[in-house]
Amino acid sequence: MKFAHLADCHIGGWRDPNLKELTIECFEKAIDISIENEVDFVLIAGDLFDTALPNVDQLKRTTKALQYLRELDIPVYAIAGSHDYSPSGKTMLDVLENAKLLKNVSKNPYKFTIDKKTGTKITGLGGKRSSLEINDFKELDKPLLESEPGFKIFMFHTAVEELRPIDLEAMQAISLNDFPKGFNYYAGGHVHIVLEKDADIGKVIFPGPGFPNNFRELEKLKKGSFYIVEKAGDTLLTNKIELNLKEVLSYSFDATNKTPDEIDSEILTTIKDFHNKIVTIRIKGELESGK
Image (cartoon, rainbow, N blue to C red; front, side, top):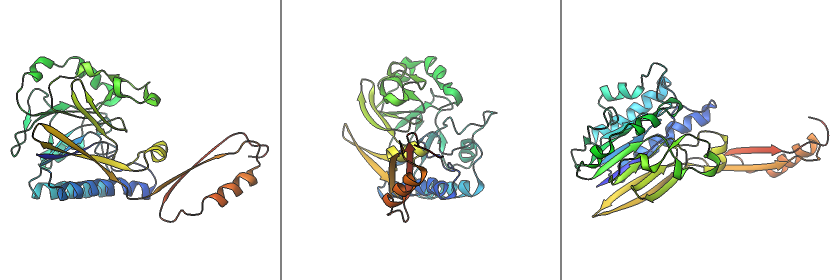
């Protein structure tokens, strides 16, 4: 059995049209790679889109990729993320589910979705605005979920207290103790990090965003990613797949005690190889004079 685990695709994110285009291209590439690897199903752990009402052109291309999977009899199991919801609580996942392009497995966490081909049992909790899904975790009947037999996957879209990076320690999070135990795989989303952890509850993976979603992520991550996971006997073999469609070059300049002309010159003489690349420039320090 083999499956793909995507999260935080944020299709349609970024204002810049070139960067916006990369969000959908990375998603399309992830689907192509998943098909090439002959996965049995695809998981999307929240924030497929960057907004509850995505651009029509972005929606058409997303739908086309999902239709391709359906034609190949590769089901898609998804949960909503914090960006997927409208103020009224509606989500585009409802439209895609009505079109039979995916299955939202988080509507009733106690009713497992069973993958017909592999028998895998999938459930989870979606993300909400302002981390309100934390309340859902607190109220979860964990013993009921733990008693379900078979190979089980739990999908979630929230930060985990014990697994947050230091720079995100202020982010609202749940504890590993809030999860039901005994699942074979915990498919995470929401926190834009690449993390694989064999925790006490089981294997927890955050696959990273489909494409970096802000300036800082471009500097830090450089590229998008997702996971392909294979069950070989009692072992789960994990493979991080990088979505490196454009090279990212990041530069930092110290403007301390320099004039505007001096820092301009330093930037222009340093950055020369930028054709068809994404370049980030960070400038800090206090100028000697000028603006």
